[in-house]
Image 1 (cartoon, rainbow, N blue to C red):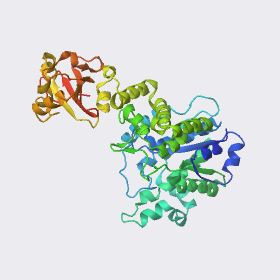
Image 2 (cartoon, rainbow, N blue to C red):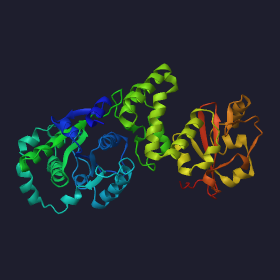
Image 3 (cartoon, one colour):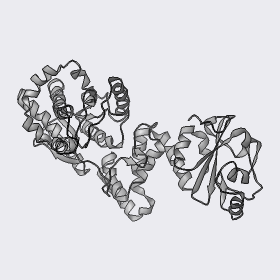
Image 4 (tube, rainbow, N blue to C red):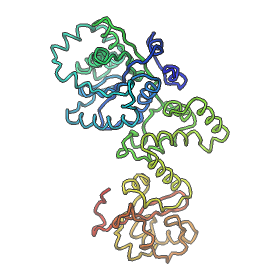
Length: 444
C-alpha cells in the first residue's frame, strides 16, 4: 500500500514536502502527529488525523502519536483569534490519560517493528530550562522566519495581538520534531493544513541545528459542503467519549450528513477500499432516499469508536424515533442512554407510586403533566385517534394508565418512563421515579 497515494485518492492530501513520497516508498519510516490535550476526549475533528496515522501504519510505517503535555501549557495560535486558557498540570494529566485510551482503540501498539507508540512532549520539556531552550533552540530560528508564518501575521495584525507565550509555540513544536528525529528516528511530521507553518519550522530546526533532513505532510481541513464547520452539532462538539456524546447522538451525526458530505466523509473516515466506496455510491445514487452512504458511514465509524453493541442500540433507538419499532428495547438501556435518545424532547416528571396506583389518562396528560393544555384538548385528540402511549393508541378518555404501562429502565425498580405521542412525530417523555418528592432531580 502506497501511503501518499492512499491519502490522495481519498481526497485527504493537502501539502507534501518534495522527497517525502520517495522516502516513504523506500521502506518503513517513522512519522508522528500531535494531539491537543485541551480536553479529556478527542472529538470527530481529530478523527481525520487518527485516520492518517491508521493509513500510515497500514502502509507499513511506524506511527507516533504525540500528546502535547507541554505544548498544552502554551497554546497553539494556529487558526485561533484569541489566546486560550492555559491548563494546570493535573488537568493536563487527566486529559492525556483520556486521549491515550481513545487512541489505543485505533492504532496497533503491539505488531512488531511498526507498532504504534505514544509520546508526551512534557517528558523532554519538564527539565529543559528557559535559558537552555533559548540557547540551544532559539538561536537557530530567526524572528524574521517566525514572523513570516500566517498564524503569527494574522494574530499580530488583529485586535488582540499575540503574547510571547503563543509566539514561542512554533519553536516548542519545532523542537518536538527535532527531539523525535534525534531520538526516535522520526523523519516525518503530519497534521492538518493549518499546521504547515509549525511543521516546517521543525524541519528547518533539524536542518540548521544538525544538518539533518526531515519531511512534512498535511491533510485537508474538513468543512461541510455548505461551508460550515465540521464536527459540530447544535449541542457543540461531537466527542469520541460516550459520556460526552452518546453513541446514539454520534450515530445520528453521521446519519444526518448531506449526500455531498457523505461522499466526502466515507473516503476520509472509513477503511473501505475504492471499489467498495464506488459501489456504495452507485447504489446510493440509484435511490438517494434510502441513504445507503450515510448508513454505511455511520455503521463503520460507530462500531470502530463505540463497538457493535452500542451500534445496535443506536439502530434500535433510530428505528424507534423515526420508524415504527416498539419501546421494549428501552428496558435494556441505562437511564442516561434513555435521556440521550429523548434529548430535546419535552419531558415531565411524576411520582412513581402515584402512577403505579393508576391514573386517568386525561389527568396524566393535562393535570400531572402539561402535554395538553386542558383535559378538553386531550379528550378531543384521543377521540380523533391522535394519542398513543408506548406506541399503543389510546382508545378511550377513561383509560387508566398504571403499572403495566411503565417501562422500567435497566432493571431498575425506581426509574421508569412512559412514552407519549401526540400525532405521529410529536414525542413526550414522562419520567416516573420512586422518590417522595417528585420535584427532586433524578440521578442519571
